[in-house]
Length: 227
Image (cartoon, rainbow, N blue to C red):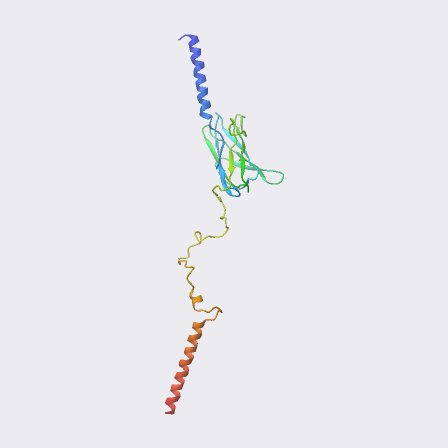
């Protein structure tokens, strides 16, 4: 092969490899689930952070959308968590620091309450690598660096993650088993033997019968003595 053809082949091969490399990382974006939630609902959110370049991710900085109130956080082995608050004391950002393998991914979870009204939540994030590169996931959904989006939709299934139920009280399905079948329609013995005014007529009747029997016995004894 002539030197000219060899150079052409090398350039073509490099271009193909570059194209394949771009194709292999095109979908490696930060993701956040679920994509649809109900209003005013405690939800478990999951942030998935894959590597999208030949370097180690060392920091993930997630900015919380307005109206999202986090209250509990999952633990990711090898990573530390720091909360950044706004001037009013509300949690504004969650920052995770650690080290991610070049071909690995990390998963971060947290529980948060959703806004009370339907809305579109945009989760802006910065992914920092150990070579100094910062991937800014803050763009629109059709951009090269899209920010994850969650839709708050009325009527969407509720998670109630970490909650106590909508009523806030114990239901029949979760009530402890006492070993006795529940028969709410059957009157109890105390109710059946007592009147509406609380008088125990059964006990009173037995007492009167006992008195009558005693009087009859005494009369019979007197009659025998007189005879």
